[in-house]
Image 1 (spheres, rainbow, N blue to C red):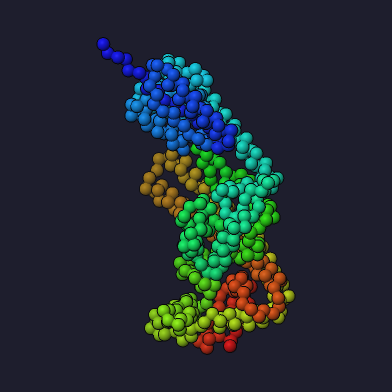
Image 2 (image 1 turned 30 degrees about the vertical axis):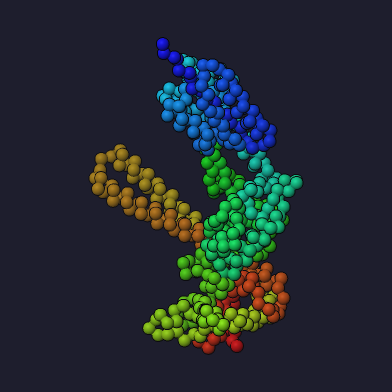
Length: 508
């Protein structure tokens, strides 16, 4: 006499947050289903698959859910019990795909709250209806959350992922407060950058010091360093809604490029980096970008000293690196590479610093006029009316070309003609359109370049206005903020080009 095999039964449980009360609910669900299955004589207990602290509308992030599906497909489960359709999945596609996968594997599902057995003739229709309702609820929740975030943005209230943001903790009133230990790391990152180090070199330095990343990982990436160096929150401001959700089901986000409003809040929280220093870092980023691959800095002098003979940068060299006579010097990188050796001498840091101080003090003798001239240049740069007029002209040309393309396509579709001639005509119009688009992009880039230059002059003026007229000691920050480049001449003097365009020759 053959014995009927017991039905192998599992359960799925999920709670959506990691709050204490939800953790209690999670444990209660696991215990409830285990006892329920084991108390049925016709059932064989397999497991309670449970995901703790997981939320969202997709099943992609639920590890135990995936294991359960895999086990069912492998023939290890005959029945899965879960509380409701919304616990199983919150969008129609996930729900139906998984139920059909299980059905094909011979595994039935039972949803307690709705009393649905998926092998029942009405089961799939009910599942479709109920999961659609659950999907609409998820949409409403997402839209309500988004609406709430945007109202906060409009009120100037900032949101910050404190667990992943170095330097700040959530204060008692919900606003950011500085974490002194982490803030010191942020300040070190800014200092190293302004001393000439690249983001990659900074990352390796932090790895060497065994400092964990904002995500508490062991290895720093240069992209993390760049994010810290360019995030306005470190100067106490906040640009809100940099990204937005484009799909409430997948939670896919994209960079906000004008699709939804952005809000900039000044002084929204305490600054870790002084605003002037933060702006100097952004200007340095722009300078290094302009230099390109030629920049591989290790010092504040990197890519700022130029050889008068060949135009190449001065680089650091170490003499007697392994003995007591060790000495770091700065010399033209191309000095011995050409047909003729460059006549510019090597310099030590103290010489460069001394010459800069002389040039700075000479510049400051007429500080008022220098600042006035800078303001005039800044205003001229910000006046983009002539370029905007050119853009308007190009836009008109683009509109004409677009109309010609549309007419050519329509004509080809309605009148018989040589396709060879048509393709030539179309190719010519396409080339014309591309040229106009490129011309427009170049004009827009020119406006952005002028804005960046104007911003650099603002920083230059602010720095001059707050500094002493006479400088006796070297200042890294001042050098990086004021100097565009220094051209080293054969006699060892340096012709300094300041960022306002002023040139001052300094000699020993």
